[in-house]
Image (tube, rainbow, N blue to C red; front, side):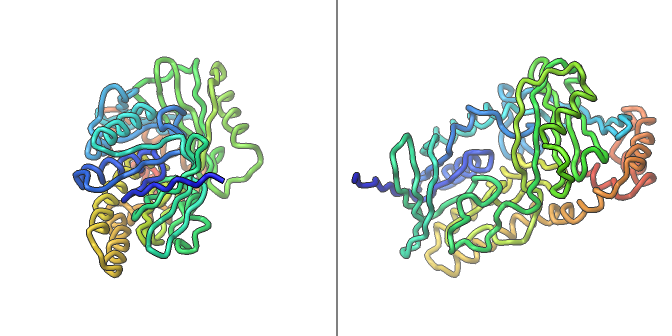
Length: 399
């Protein structure tokens, strides 16, 4: 039997989505290359469609990564809020956001990380994880058919929702699992739909229980049409059937080019997100906005906080001091966005009780305002008059 090759690193990051890529780049940059940093993923992060509608706030993204024209599909100047009766209310802002080309966006961060010394092994499958008596992590992987053991002092879990990597590790029992309020989302890339290239459209009502549907402009004549439903939504039809029904009803001339789906961890807890040099980040740490289900900028902000904590952790020898840093990582996230997400998570039950009649009434009030007069303040007033609980839903999307 061939002997398994053992590789030694200081910091290993599993998962090359926005959180993992940002974490790899920031750790390498801030440490000035004094640590051996390895980034792993089961695929190349730019070779498959991203399970995402790809919309972000340009202002928030710019604070975390410099936008580049080559990976921006569209600039967004408005949002249509559409009621069950299909009445529209428009929120307009010149700098509302952008639609990303996620594969090119990922490639840009990956290239930047490689340029400053991060080693990346893609097409690598993690098969087993153990915590060794000497305080190191041992990660068994398969890369191009070859079995490898990777030893590391710090392991960063950016693998996404569901605790895939840490699930069977006793030392990590009780950590955030990235599975709070796990919801199913699905979208289709569609042609043959006429829609403003500068607007995204959000649909609310009882036909999307606990969630909403969307239409986002994409490249050329393509749009992204999808929906996410609450965890407790009735399972009367498959999610794919519900999406197809929505598309055929509202866009009868649409041609579906591909359908994609995934799970979103839409909750926020106060469970620990680090222990014994094992750090969770991004969807794995449940940092998704519970209402809008947005997670790109949230994950990147989380990764920036993580990078500082990991480097402080590496500089400490004391077990007690390292424990304090792990706890502080959660505190920093709670201060940045976690507490807000806790409030939004608690408010989700209220949203599910909003009736179609209330949605229609609020949207009707808003639709009577001109685009120039539809300020955030006026939206707040119109929504409050109709039903106070709606204000949280609106706020989540336009902040």
